[in-house]
Length: 433
Picture 1 (tube, rainbow, N blue to C red):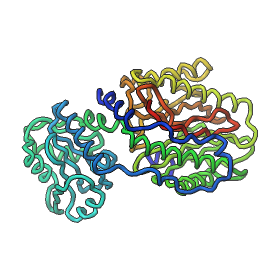
Picture 2 (cartoon, rainbow, N blue to C red):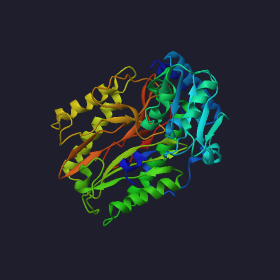
Picture 3 (cartoon, rainbow, N blue to C red):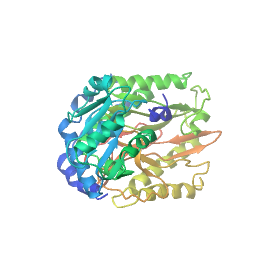
Picture 4 (cartoon, one colour):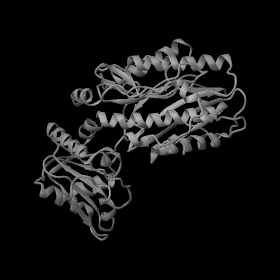
């Protein structure tokens, strides 16, 4: 599965800083770059981390309710997906039959689901016990209305999480004539954008898995391999190391100039550029790492472009300081590439996509490192750092490592490689001080 296919399936941040500083201890072991070039046997490395607890989810709900009071929102509606999992632990999918969570500003949450789905939904529900079921001939929206009435929510604002489908809003709002629908983002983003110490540990482990898998793939590259062969190696390595929700992308030669791939069939040969973009999940939290190799001896142009991308990645890191806007990060690297003769802006040859994206339970979350983004960076935010240079008809280079913001500045989950000769990089210590 390629990355695009897989991704289909406010003052609050500053308050998170003290929690992070108190909860995350420095000293997670740094893995030397050299270790990735030895023939170590792959084994599951996830035994040192634990999933998010029911207590943590209850704390998240309490925080959401505080934000609802701050923004004068009476209740919010969430459909299956990352946000539902974040607050309740429910891992479910979307269909034409509504399953939803209602979080009121005061009182207990409730779940609405079809009668015959309720036993399955309960299997992952970690908080709350108010489950309202509906039969096939009934309206689930009447159940939502009753939940709100039971909690004395009959007027005010009702927030819808950004991915809630239109038929849900359209089915519910006529039943609530004294309520106004608004975005729930001040609440959901206000919680999910700022990662806790536990969330950072899970992301750190996911990135460790992906980085180790890259080392395994790199030392097993052979002439004649197809892109599918390399993706298969990466899939198997991440799975053996304990990753789930795995996705892989491998682009060779001219195909590497397409950031998210092409139907072109390519074979690994001497001098081939290999651009990979891969990740996995650990207890629901994502990694996202890109590496660019050259099989055999690199040309001078390949070496030069690779180093320009690496230099750009460092400029992103240096700009990602608390208080700076996310847009300024993109502007910094884009200006540098233009000075080197690439661009301007998003033009090719050059950097044709945003410089990075938020990451957490989803591979792509808000906020993005993109032109014009005014959101200021704050402790607890996590981003990919992935500038690239793409030269149509020749090759492309992208390096991507994820970072997290602390009150002392940005920190790497994985440190980027320093040279094309040793193109893996290393695992960074997890720290916030």
